[in-house]
Image (cartoon, rainbow, N blue to C red; front, top):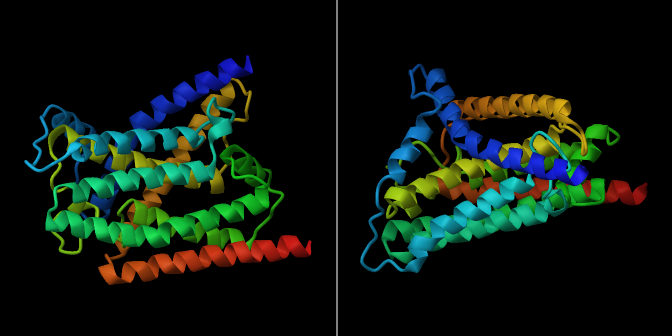
Length: 319
């Protein structure tokens, strides 16, 4: 019975995240437009854009290799698999034993490699520039994420998402400065990994300092739709990951019934809406930093994550 419940919650989870991903991007854009005094496109506009692009055949450069064709599919699949491992409305899903934070970080890194290779494949100046900057940023972002995961492992005794969420939900840890530092580090990595403000500007392709957009200038049609969908999935993944780790309240426990699933779904929607609103408010109130400041920004995140892990290691060692 528990196995059947795990399979059912996993299937519902996949359907939920697939439907919600474009809406998260659309709601963020709509909220930012309203805060800036503009009407803005409706929240479901990304769904229309994806449907329009999927009907178009991609145009590839003459010197494009198999990398340009396979990279968007690899990025979408790896991001979707990572999102399937992050619990949403219920714990104890079928993939819960595989829901390791290190595995999620590895899948995100694989998707980033696919994006970088796609940007360098044709050999354009903008694509190579964006790929080089993306790799330089990831040299700070990935260690910061892994050190933050180390902090969770020290507290929960595991890097499994269900166990970490259960440990935080019980409230036995209390308020810890180290957790606040790890949360700030993860927020900084999330902004950089999703090309959000202040690291990058997701709303324009005209900047000379662009990073993620530069690697997609040679993509079109169906391939561009896949990259846009992958970006939406990744943004939803980071919001769901922050909600699962730092806001675990309301999630249905493993083996719970449909009533608990419904309450967990409502709680997940409220948390995602709150995080989306917070992202829109933050991006509306801050300007994009210069590209040479981004390594300093991510370096500070890495230092905060290291400080959080050191404080936890000392406190648990003394205890």
